[in-house]
Image (cartoon, rainbow, N blue to C red; front, top):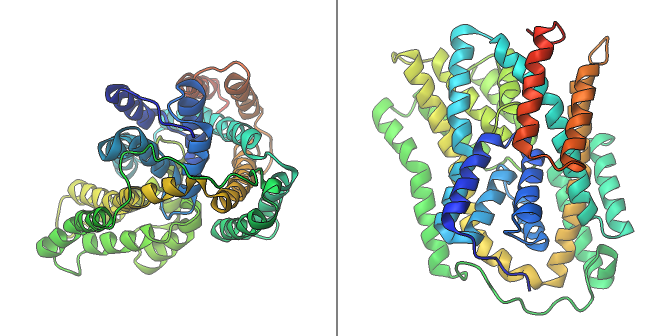
Length: 428
């Protein structure tokens, strides 16, 4: 049995708040960062517990990295720990992206910000590649799991199979193999014994009903308030309802739902243009926090451009905050509701086999994401960006071989971007 160590709440609180300011790199980079911090360096959670939690979060709608933070925070300090971890993970990005969104609509692009991002993007590629190496080294324990990762990569790249379908196929395949040959997916044949729960609470029906009731009430309360204040046809109510629906279908992370958001926000409602949508994605990709924060940008710009008689800055702020609220509140519901049951199933051999296959499939998808990031970072229509290649290589070595801390790598890469831009090699 792997137990959760005793960790001072103050230490955990400081870590989650700091993580909120440095969790660049999208979900894969953020998961790699937490793995490095929580498993390898601080040893607050075991490898087995981390991967078990990750596999559950991958199956949920919403940003899996933030949900993983909530899960670990809950394991360490119960409901309060999960709240602190989840809020700390996302709150800094709320204010950072709110400020950048205001600068964007008021003044257009800012050269200094573009220069910082120019150095940051290759560091993001390095973070994602390090995630492939770090998680793959531990998760791909058998040849069959390596084959699953390869099939996941090829299915995603060549056949265009959506990530949720890949996860579903891996789950079913792993479960079936676990019933007949569990060793093929790295599970001991006699590994189905009971597990002693060393978690904050045990699952009960009364607890589940309380979580659902309180969570849904908190989720809907601002929407009801907006209906009363502005009327059911208000722009703010439309945004709240649309992004509430989007929060329920974001399986596979932000990229899987961006097409849906673009179709509705740009084509149906006309809240913003396609170019503005892409600019928002660029801001979300290169600021700390979940990539799904692009929804906050959409909510801000849409309300700014359709203020309904309010000052644009106030309308934009309301649009951004209501969008963020309905996007992230469900994450807490999924984790607080399901985590006790998932922990109880941790010793189940068939479930472990299924989740081992899911982890292998995730490695393949992460590799695909790294390849996409690298393609857009290193190559343009007519040239290879040698600066980006060098920064990514140095950042990868700094993380993988020299064990330099993630914040230093991020800060150093951003600083190099400014220097290169000043010398005429970047966007300044």
